[in-house]
Image 1 (cartoon, rainbow, N blue to C red):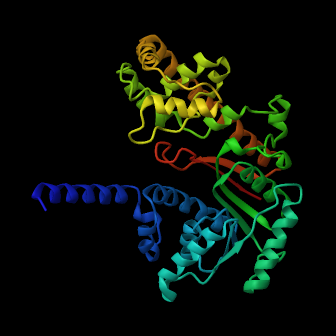
Image 2: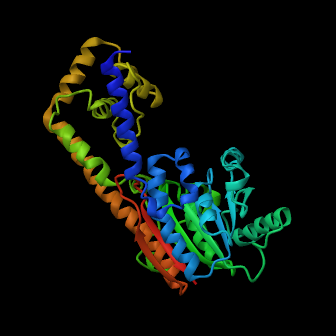
Image 3: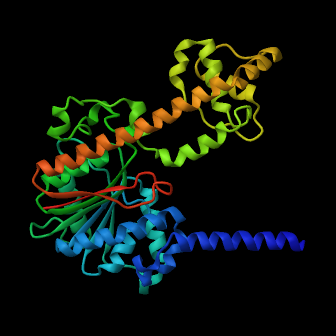
Length: 376
């Protein structure tokens, strides 16, 4: 192979290794679990490195004997916690059996000597309704019956753990914490606010607190909740770079599609930012026609229409206006997230629990970065 290519490969590998080391402060991860890092993406290493000390403090302060990781995925968080707390029993609850199977396969790869003996799994889904407490207790009882554990016993002190539970699951975990007497602590970093109250049969995700309800905030728009999942810090620098060169059509593909659709049908102006990115090699006309089909509008066929379309988008004022609207929407998304988090924290405080916010992650690396920590 050419020497220049070998140098390039070596440079990339070095860069990736530096990146991984920067995102994984070793002081926060158990030495016995360092071999697990090869299974983790840099973002997950960053999240676990920041979250584990926080969880460890709650375990110590509240004398936790049992931990339930709800929405555990492939079990990275519970695996690290199990190594740090061999006296605690940990139950992973996950609705997708494929993720539990993958988690157990990763467990097996470490061998019998290093595999945590105090970690268990359950493939099931919590009932996100008024019966969530009884549903949770049934799951614990089934786990005790299958594994000889004591999660459901009255003297157990349970910590609920949720790293990015989606939508209503985060809200109902707080309801579960309130209703279940054995739950003594909760650490939760919420995610996917756009799914709150998405389903008609799962009402109760917002508002939770009397405080927010008294303010008259009974409903948030779907667009605001979706924007609340994105950190403005992540997008603004990129948008400002694009605004320096408004004539670059390759960077303004969304603007092109939005302007054209709004010309064909004024109702389509409300469909901004819902398009998927163009596939490699796809022309702008093909991209627009695909979205026209989605909205049941007539196709773009003539070349002169394409030329007229490009000329309309080159107009600097329209491009600036488009991106400025996007920036305003991002800013309002931050407000939406604050309202949701304030509602959840107020709910816990109204119950009389010791509760607080803690910013755990860098928002540029993990946009849902605010943890709610509470104990009884």
